[in-house]
Amino acid sequence: MGSETPTVCVFAPSILVTVTVESGSEGFDDIHFHLGGQGYWIARLVRELGERPILVAPAGGEAGKVVRGLVKAEGMDFAPVTTEGATAAYIHDRRDGQRVELAEARSPDFGRHEADDLFAKTLQHAVGAGLCVVTGRRPTDTLPADFYRRLAIDLAAAGVRTVGDMHGEELDAYLDGGPLGVLKLSDEELVADGRVDATDEAAEWQAIEVLCEAGAEAVVVSKAEGARAMFKDVRYRARSPQFEVVDPSGAGDSMTAALAVSTVRGLDPEEALRLACAAGSANVIRHGLASSPAELIARLTPLIDVVREQT
Image (cartoon, rainbow, N blue to C red; front, side, top):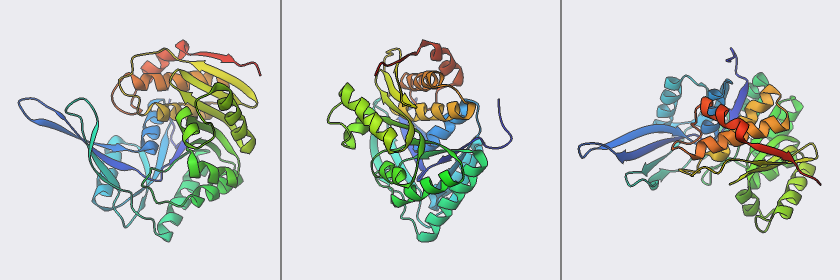
């Protein structure tokens, strides 16, 4: 499909360098260098699904140079904001088949001018694309939560459509600022935020309704078996094939990428949920976060069962 200009702006409060050690041959190890972080993973799958994303994120220090080089090598549009502090990085050991964290460098503190530059670039490219994916902070990120409130106000004022993948303080701050288009979060995040006491169906539907009343136009809650969602006061339940899970990490980000693509293309709720759940299902059967091929997602999409719920 393709586009000469970006169709999706992805705001990421942090991007990181990942170094993974895996078992090699002849007694040596294989060492892989990749980019990581929610925003990057979402942008990568948006591109795989045929849209053109532009990633807005901070980059600083030696790790920031690696980020710039890897993004350039991949040919992805990137609007970096230079920070004095170094970009976050981590090292994982997967020689035994499981991901074991060996070391992590946290995200840098933001100076006032750095935060202003990040805000300005996000707004600039969001207006240009017409759609902004707003991602949440990592536990070690230091960007103030009020950044999200301001972003909500200004994106709404500029008429930019939004897809949000966040919870906790970021979500509360964003909803304090203004309306949110599509919101994607998981059932575990509903519990972590105290919106439900447990993954009880009635409580989840009530939490979804509360989020819609608070300003979300649509809410999609990802679950192991698929998703529950509400679009314009209509409830939907999506069920995915129950494949054997190789790695569940990144399934939610894959769904968010698919929801962004669905928004750009004006898909109806049923089509959007099928594409999102297919992207999530394709992710869990392989290693590599939000890295499924578009052809596999397309094959899985008709297998997703979506029904309207009676209220």
